[in-house]
Image (cartoon, rainbow, N blue to C red):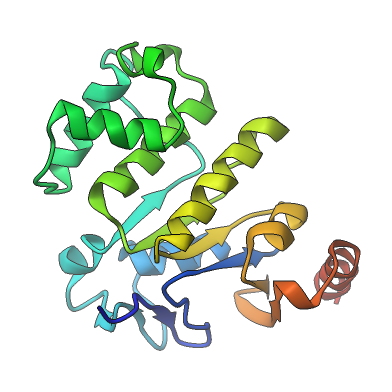
Length: 224
């Protein structure tokens, strides 16, 4: 299978099996980049492609290849975690939606078995994010778009979520993650992009820089 690629003009390719983290101040264009790939915005120049397909030409087909995890995942509070996953799996056109398979996906995403049959109204943010990852597993999504997915999570929940994302990367997914967390970007990212005023200013190999060096470089770029 050809690698899944996310591409836009003036932005790098995000290849299968890697995590590219976008850092930048509020208003830098990080979420706008995500919205271009989702087809929510039309590019003023260039194009956004998913697996070689122009998002504007085939918005439905490109969405089938990816999964979007926002800062706050909206679940139906009156439904259980399992019922929410079944509903969104049906919307996504996933064929294998048996309770056994969906429970397995939730378990792989780290949701406790006892929570699967509880109403989502009582879920923490971390539990909601795990339902999102479970959908990615069920969908076998080859590309993930993550927009501040760990904002507001405690350190343990944040670490658990990033571990799940790394597992999806290792399974061959291409991951584009918007974040303000320099430490986690350095820890889980393959490459790190610094954005300012709608432009990608730098692209760094995460293995080539320390956390303190990344912080200094970030402050330097944002201060220009």
